[in-house]
Image 1: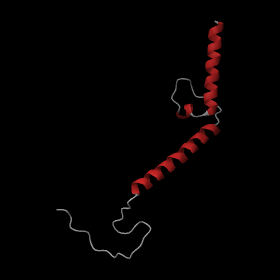
Image 2: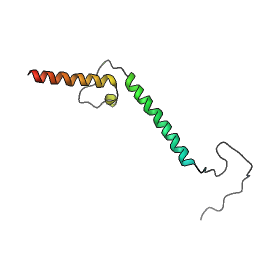
Image 3: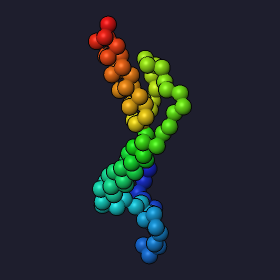
Length: 92
């Protein structure tokens, strides 16, 4: 029921993927490093995208908008709107 022993294979064969039954000892560390690099690159691309994004029309105040919290233009616009609302409230 175990499927039997591993089949014999030539020991002198080399391949970039590691050959038959490859399980490098440091695969966990290599995977963690690759994932950290991928997430780091994605973070900087995401941040750059938020800084460079330009909108002609701002989103509605209470509507969900994915880039509302990363777009520099939208953040500054909403901050100005809050200040304007606070000033008009003080004047009333």
